[in-house]
Structure formats: C-alpha cells, structure tokens
Length: 112
Image 1: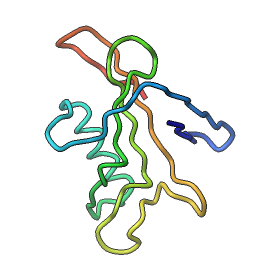
Image 2: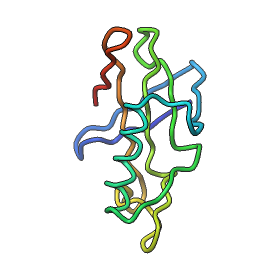
Image 3: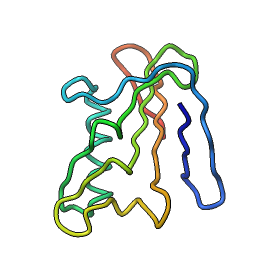
Image 4: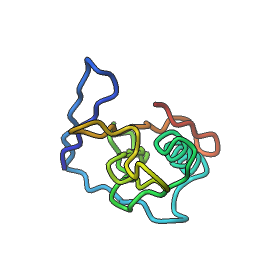
C-alpha cells in the first residue's frame, strides 16, 4: 500500500507499508480516534455534516511500536449539501492526516 500524504504545500511524504492495514468499521475505534474522525468531517465539510466511506479511514502500525496509528484520507469524505467533496481536496489531490499513537495503556495520546 502506498499512501501519499501532503500536509504542507512544500512537503510531500510517501509511506510504503507492507503491513496490512485495518479499514474503519463503525464502533471499532477508540474515543480519541472517533473524535479525530468527527473533527475531520467538521473541518472538511465546513460544519455541514458528512460521512467517510470505509476506504478513507485506516489503522496500521506505521512506526513499529506495536500500536495502531490512524490515517484519515479526505478523498473518501462525502459532505452534505454542495460541494459534496471535502474542502481538504484540491484540483488533483486530497489531503490525508496521519496520527501516531503514543502513551501508556489507559493514557493514550494521538499525535498529528
């Protein structure tokens, strides 16, 4: 799997992962991950509401620490009303956010 991440205009990161990822399934994410997903919907749809297709949310151990990290791809976000696409999408590419899980069990933080 190749995930193209474009967080800043001048920085492009490509992650090559041979570790199979888990796609998003309702009710399987932590409270922190659900909050981040809901915040991505608010930001991407400018408060109009919307939902992610299951292909836009991934968990995988990206940094080898044994914890599942979170990837949110705005290409799979459908917004209510017009425009239907996330405002995090440009003419040819949509942004993706990567959150690395940190902390000890019971006190987990996700870093962006």
